Length: 214
Image 1 (tube, rainbow, N blue to C red):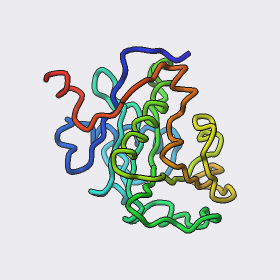
Image 2: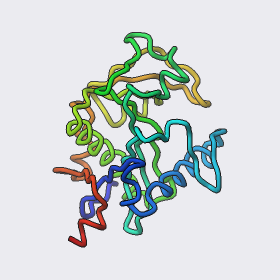
Image 3: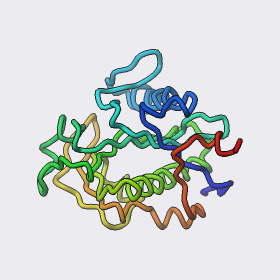
Image 4: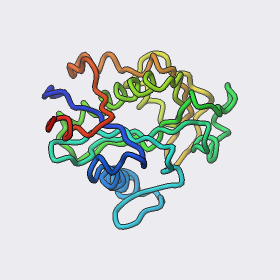
């Protein structure tokens, strides 16, 4: 069952603004280490319990879900395809029905993860709220669509329409995954939002703690 506490704000920051968000940048890297290195045993670059890669650049924006103790429990990282990006760099063969995008109005979503040790009732809210935050971010920055690589059943679970799969699945880091293209208008997981009572704006471009103190 999806618990419905006070609405959680999704915070968005980049390397340029990360200093305003306390240890959120380090906290998201620790979550990635738990999710990808520890839980899935993937051979990703890591140091001192934090996962990182070559796409953690000034162009990247981190959308994070933090708990009451300000620990990052969920993440979506996005970057414009006008910069080097993961799908084009590592798995271009997955993009079969469209040309690989290279534009500031098409962004890639990567490093999507949730802390599986977090309280289950609240955990069910994290991806729906992150997707809502992503849609708000895209609308506010004239982003027309997002691309990415994922297991089809996970995407289809949250987004019931508007997902354009770009080709057949292939084994990517031990899982059968495929490339997708989703127009911004389809990013809101309506069924899950209704179930979790997620309404209105969820995105914050400034620290939630700073808002509370204002």
